[in-house]
Image (cartoon, rainbow, N blue to C red; front, top):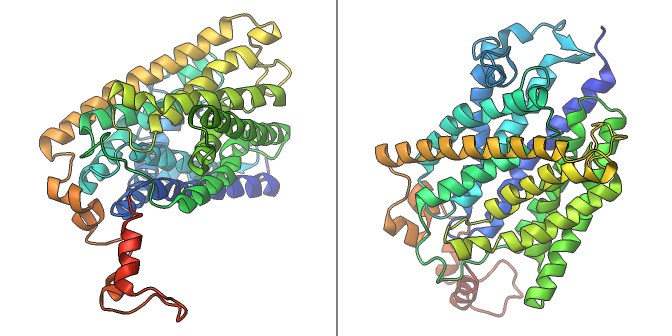
Length: 440
């Protein structure tokens, strides 16, 4: 079959959109960090492009999409070693060069590992994070990606027939579970929850959420692997589910707190995107709106669990990604419509409880595997090189302690100058004090 330029263009565009989600995530998490930790948080997210991207080329793609070597559990790690066997123009599937699919899936691997970083803010050694990201991608993400995304051999996709169009299990439940385990092994931040640790830059958070939403169209619609009806279907459902998720989250804030917040709106965006990810090609737009609304409400409540249960999940990776991923995965069992591209029927469309049971098996299996292996990885790193920064570094800021940098340089102000505009009426010391008072 000849190469299809339209399909190639669609997949390369989708790949670029998913890549954009990584800097979007860095902004989303970075804005939620305290000012003394913003660079470290963004570095943790960006660093996954280095570690996971390299691993993907060497053996990650093979472990995820190579010929099965373990009953649907793992691909052959050496089959596509360094991708050398995929570089010929003739190596293609349905008009799409295999290397385009390799690039697309690489973005998923990078982003998934980056999601975990939000649970470890303010207190994890950067070198330990780098080692963690390498081990976690190798031992957790690549095998689970084989289970879910290898439609020919993966035991979740092919063996039991679970519906997961774009990664509710492999990405969100997987990363959310790892985040829960990692923050427990790390321990709480100094002063949490006694001290308020507010986001230092909510405009950055909103920008990051917007970029995530934009990039998510590549994530979901791009998973159709061709510009066709399924892609358009997933695109529309991604829009409407996210809209209702924002509504759900803000309604809960208004009822519970008396105010609807920008952080709530941004979090609602991500909750809706997470929940619709597995279901975007399986439900009607009405079903997508219902899933988004339920996820907005459910995740808004779930983020408070960390205070009741005592685990310090800095940026609510558990409450949004684990809970949102679970809701989206399980609600397929109720809202799936057999006329959709996924062609599965849920309880509300005469399909009985069979699909719900299958979805639950997939979710529980990923939680169990990710949780156990993540705990082993984190405990080994803790014993060998330590996970947490020194107390002094945590107190003064991880940016200075780990990177010898600061996100905001006020040195010119300390010399007695004023802010850039000649219209400034406050002296530099006064402005520095005012600014410092707003920092997290």
